[in-house]
Length: 268
Image (cartoon, rainbow, N blue to C red):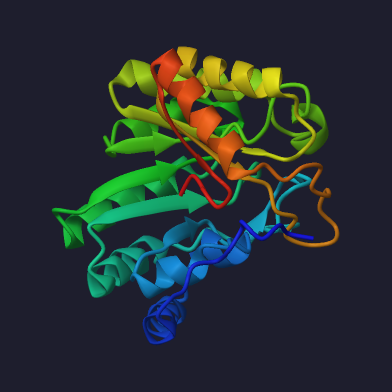
């Protein structure tokens, strides 16, 4: 049972439905809906969303994720333009773009990120852009292609502590993710990452993950409570309370890195 301190905030239902209508009209995917994010009502009611490119089917099988798995769709060439148009309609001045992992594509979908950034800037010149990317199978050329577009922030979530990584993210690699973040930092772009707690990790492992991300060059780290999105996903091992989340923020402060932690904190 979800504890009482984890509450979805009140939201404007009318504005929520307006945003939903714009997204549906433009045939756009969001991680908000696909991942069953608890913050989607609040975000949509404030006319914001995290757009998800490259379809809604992922080629991986992470055990905590609600996104559909299987054979993905063909890359939609018109998707970047529709996203840019939705951003303009909603009046978004800070756009967050993420993706499903596409191991079937040679560049992991990097080219679609490039097209999307270019289209957003063409239609919304003052809009700042944060990209929440997959690990691109560790392809440095694909990452460099994205870096070349100079978004304000490149986010890549490590998702969990090193010990649990092979179980929860069997097709990923803890070190590969850290290497991605190092490369982003070396480019001069702000590097950001995040992970979940409540999956069976130990306190010292959480601290080590914060340290690893800081040493990889992350300027910001988000830490949120894992909430089981469906019965097929792994169960919650622990619900952290507000005091424990505050302590994680203090640990980050002592290390010299900005940590934003809380029950409903999400990286996007």
